Image (cartoon, each protein chain N blue to C red):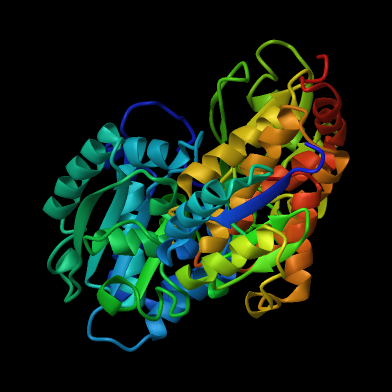
Length: 420
Length: 110
């Protein structure tokens, strides 16, 4: 199957510089430097319709353009490899196995927006990814792909590897900027957005690792080639992570628009225990559960939204028949209550209220009226807070109550999980 | 428990920052001194009214006392012991917001 990011013959070893060059690596950078045409990067990415792969799906071309247009004597680029979504490992795989793809992507972004300094913001537990990137940075500098006077041009770009802390919010773009400035990982008030005033108050492009990895390929092969993958509204591919609940766990790069069932059964081999699927959490813990009736939904932004969820960062969680959805909701509510940084009262209110509501229902303490309170709590807090954690925490809980109300009612009536 | 009354004290950031811990201790002490036994003083995760912190809500009587100061404790204790409600601390919070919280409490979330 054709892919954009992974080479045709995938291996678990680090892709060498020679192997990367063998598939056109650094040719995009070379072409842009030779032609002195950094604006072409932005044009191609815009024409390609690339959207962020970190979860928010923001149009990458727009972000590049806004940072490029910002007037400042210094700008920064941050490649976000915090990857704090539980279960997600696609950025780690890219950094570990294809470090030069990341380096070329970051450098092209820097060239496009006029940044002279960049950071690889890498999850501190990813030792192998850091080692792989560090070695690749040395190799790239040796070939003048990085550093002073890139490929003999006047363009210089200094890149630094940064070991990122692992709280969930530390991967939020402005929290990452705080960390890079030596502060605690607490999201900033927005606006201003990073493209206006980011790192040390300077215009900063913060983009996810997988997003940046697409850029050398788009510049090299062109927007039309990129659009040969995926759908008109969701062009390109995305890497989806399947966990240990399937027979063949792994990171699978698929064209957007591929049916969910093909990923789970075709790539993953179905659930390990042969059980049927009860629910799918399609994009990480901050997305809404889908019932099994949605298994034929195409993996693209619009279709997922129509079904009631989002693609998020593409980490799939599959719930087998027999599992209690109150327990699943409680697990995620507990996660967000623990990961809320505490800076915004509304976030603490929502996350702790969800957790308390679910615990009471679990114990069978209260009336069915409790089931109607989730939507009210979410509505009360919607739009509040500095980051999107409030919306994230609501998605799995509200959807679990909506689609699997029977499990909650059973708990209220009996204080136990429904029979499998 | 039938007939039981609850005095719920918000313990989120703003309320604590403006003295809800001290208020809670003072109210508990006052109720002990007056020998009141049918009221349970409990902390509450949040009433979402940080702008009028600290907040105290009486359940099930639906009295919401906002921006409570140490000097208000005596009047609140008087109310709990059969005196009039403390009007000056009431009606500071938007009615829709109050109703949202009262419904949470009526549903049993406390």
